[in-house]
Length: 461
Ligand code: UD1
Ligand code: MG
Image 1: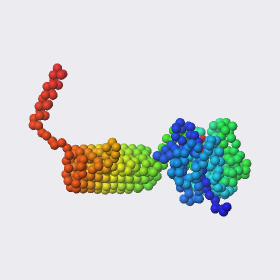
Image 2: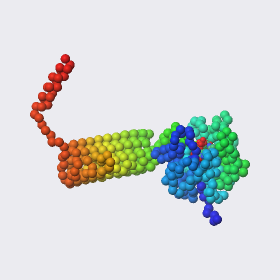
Image 3: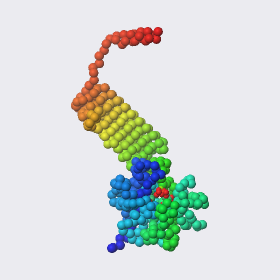
Image 4: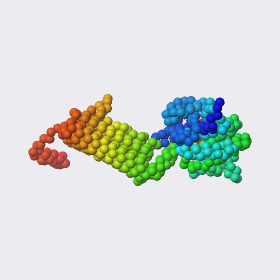
């Protein structure tokens, strides 16, 4: 076989049961910012292949077919390896290596599906350290968690060289007191990994093969081990629902800081919830208490006012949305358009400068440039079976409290009288009024007041 130069094999371990999550869903399918944990790791790993020749394997349990589908939906070239029994992290790596074409000078980087905040630059740094400091056989990514918790301890000699890793549950008191911990991420030279894996024995306590035991085995074979320390925030593992919430908080904080650095003004950043795929251009202003679901793009000059809930929407330059607005999937809000309080928009397009400022539902509609939708307007888009379209021409004025019963078309510059129920097409420049004519009864109000007052007095007496 022709030699092709060193390659990086990324292995993502995700076959664990995740019992500590107390959930029916596999642990790695729990979301952070709307994307499963595994998706975050896949994306970080995939970005490495821009600069490095790499392939990617995800290790799953045989029952995790949905997870396999998800993984291939994120990275279509990903290889799936199945681990029949969850016999530990070292065993999972062995399963990944089966059938993988390896060369001695290749590197293998092990990532965990439950460590979602890992960044591409860290994976690259680990790889570089491994490749640049031969004869290093292993690089371990270490961190210092803020409080004493269940991570594996990196036991070092007086020079700081890591000698072995002891899992928290097997550690003695002195080892538990060590604050330098294993993040789980490790890089191996293939020649080293192939020597150490067969040396790893099952733990007496639980029969699992620990990848962490590779460190001691590496020394036996004359390989060096190096550590790379990274901030805990980047490599915090998710093992419980509390960890998941913590990971979400850390991810949100990271993204908010990134967007602020790119010129987004956030009045109260800690109250803005972003999705993993939110796009915010420079020059956007975000007021407090906002939720962004999947697939939202905010273009320059947009202002989103407090307490708005937005998903599946593109908001074009200088548009204003909120306060208390709800934008649902399929929505485009055009340049300089305005969506005000208690307005819900679904699968609709507002053209340049169009407005719906108060208390409306606009669904399956197109709204022409500078059209004005009055307070309380409802597009009646659903007949109980099918959805229908409403087309509102540019410059049209829809009077307050109107019902537009779809399918229906309102022409350019048309005017709809307030409280109309429109069931037929309205032409360009037409005025349409569709409500019961007003009747007047002179003196009738006075008579009603007098009768009622008399009745009230009788009842009180
Ligand atoms: C592991 C490390 C620990 C480290 C911590 C960091 C080992 C033995 N322990 O502990 O030193 O401080 O991560 O977060 O490596 N998995 C499989 N197959 C298995 C077992 C696990 O694929 O048979 C996967 C899991 O899905 C998970 C990852 O490996 O994504 C780590 O397993 P987990 O059980 O979470 O290990 P920790 O107890 O967190
Ligand atoms: Mg874990």
